[in-house]
Length: 330
Image (tube, rainbow, N blue to C red; front, side, top):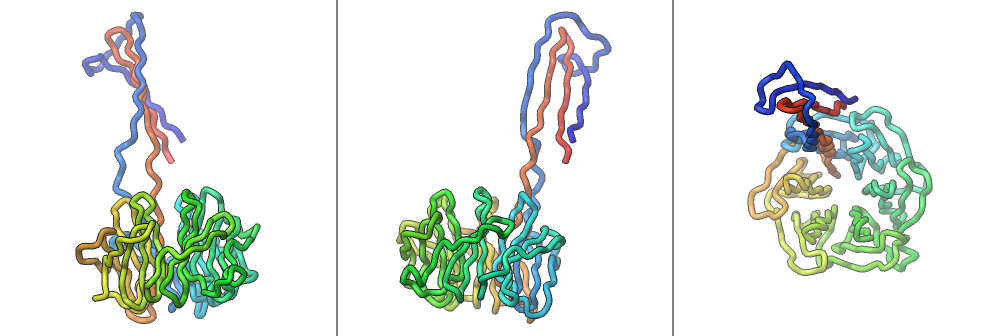
């Protein structure tokens, strides 16, 4: 809804009770409203107590969004901030599901041909959800409502029997990245059809989640067994250890918050959510933790929409100023 307000003053800014028939000058100023502090939230799955949690970026205001029931075993999670939806994979029920960000309206969107659905990722521009199935050795995608399922990467058919586990998408670059359940390799292929499989990072231990910072040309990952958060150049070389091994146990999920240049990770056996700057070089913070069965697995961020533009229309009536303020209300 749009609220309009009209007023008049002298050009000096003092109120005026009369207008003039002199020439009219019209000036329109468009501007962005001062942005309030962002209220982006973390969401994470907990595969031991079968819950999905959310909190502020500093770990405060922690809430249970969904309590899914014993044995459901939620794994990968992905957030559609604009539509207000969260998507997740359930290993215990072999389903991929969707709900509103407050946990209401949960529906199953994929329930067939799943054996160990692990990570999920969204390509919102294309209206697609992707998932890795560890036990069926393929990466598939569908429309956001679960229709139109197709295989993107069939690893056995490609002569590769590794089990895909975590995913990262680069729609602008036309690539999909994935890690294996039990290897130290990060792979890449063409996003359109899964062709052109190549190894982009090797020599690691057991890679878990992957994050691409395309603007900086960096690829980030967690290494479960060496207890490290690391990165290197997308084109190869420049490998750095950012965090660990001290304090990290089994880091799995990983996400980059662009607005604060901060990494957030889920450490299952460490029973914690950690955070640190994307360039490393300093201590990291534990922003959420708990006793067993608290066991975070994957993590994502819901972003607050940016405020819409506002406008002021200024009309000069001789020595007076007629103004109109237009504000869009949600």
